[in-house]
Length: 321
Ligand code: DON
Image (cartoon, rainbow, N blue to C red; front, side):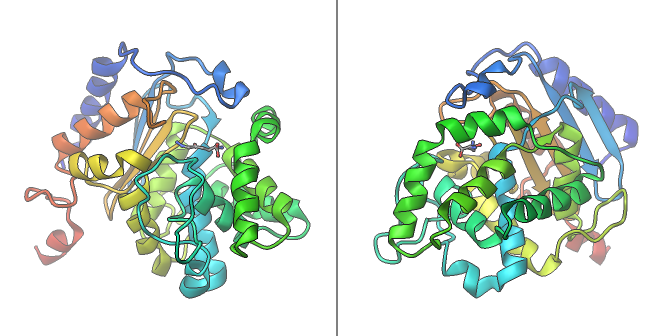
């Protein structure tokens, strides 16, 4: 993939190239998110052997938002297994917006765990009694993946909870079909809290690298995720992670990824590296404009696309050599 200096140069050049792009709008539907500085822009790459490359506002904290969804899905799979989890949520791309109020016409399941409906169903599966225990379990797992202490942004949590009526409607809609149990407020509190976790680009890159590294955190060496479920998580990220841009993303960038309305986006290059980008100006689909630009260019520059013929990082190829 190149020397350490070459990779740092690539990251620095990407930052310089895109730092003045002002397209897109900061999310405002959760009033607290509107306070983000639209100019913030950070990039981090973390390799599976623990090397870290950063540029710009890589240490600026923002809320994880929908980027919590793959990790919550992983936790549900670990706790309930594949079949019980799939009774509550499908794995089909919906082609619709992240907040669409829509369940599968035959099964009544949400289409996938990356849209809000699916993520609320998953939150219902990983919640605990009392509610704080389930939230704490999620935060602790995220801390292990990031390799540092994390905290919830209480202002964003209050703001999301105060305005989250659409998510409440989705949750009660699912209760009507027995997709979630009657502890609806607990599931929602779990979901809102997950979304309000503060992270930075380095955290996201390391969380991504932990998935890329079969569940072991590259810097601390801690086994964080059960590797037998990671392939399912990466698959739904690949097909559904960018909502109604998921197909375009898979085509152009070709690696599993997830975005959040806080402006973060993270991508997993299996067995190689994790990428975390933060830039709060979003496009019409709710994805970070500069985040997408950076990932696209990194993928083409380093040959990261899953079906890239020159994908020199393919672990299978390396293993064969
Ligand atoms: O459910 C919500 O509205 C948010 N807390 C999370 C949404 C989100 O990040 C969607 N992603 N792009």
